[in-house]
Image 1 (cartoon, rainbow, N blue to C red):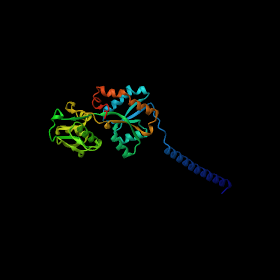
Image 2 (cartoon, one colour):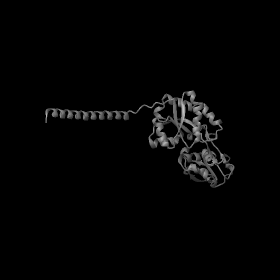
Image 3 (cartoon, rainbow, N blue to C red):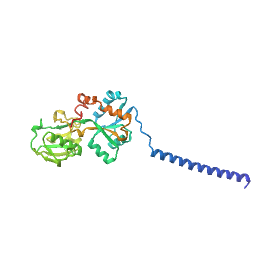
Image 4 (cartoon, one colour):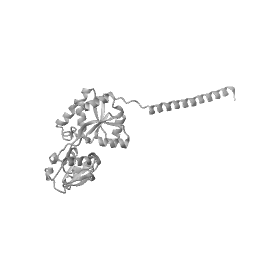
Length: 292
């Protein structure tokens, strides 16, 4: 091999070594960059537009957000934008992480179950409205006409069943033992009319109304099922603990924009709107928070 060839080979090997070394260093730097980025996530910064999660099946909740955005939020220097997400786990995760600013569709008991099951860092700030509940009948015009052994349709799920039973107790139709917010059929200790209960998914209650004596459930569901409100015997105020909460990601409670959002939702004009609106998607379906 000539001297020139040997020098060329040595230079080629040296260049190759430097290329490999450079690749290793670059790889290490990139790895360190992504590790730091993963371990120190970008700080959440809330802008002028604050997205609020609502239940997309409840059109009235979106109307409430639009009212706040148009008539209240401008006074606090923010804009409210609804985010309808069907999957509540995804929605709650987004609120906890700051992707969304808040949610408005959960009562306190439901929220406790969500936090216990998922570990989300969420805080219920205060109640903002209640879902109207009604006692409906195809057969009678008043509760006084309800006969002995009447068949009563109530929701099967825990929170909604407790609310239905609590309303019946408030009307003097039965008596419960223990904590009312967790009440189930087995907790009935006095039943003067010997009412019989049948459990259904709360969305199915309007469909079974003609096969029972009374059904107890959300006004919004009966409206959606084309059941006229004239078939409602009573529309009692639901207990305060079942009111919808303004829910915020716990670590964002002191954020200046979130504080503005909280003040906007606590503005007395929201209560006035719920009391006076003629919007058929809101009136009687969403009501001001009861006193107890």
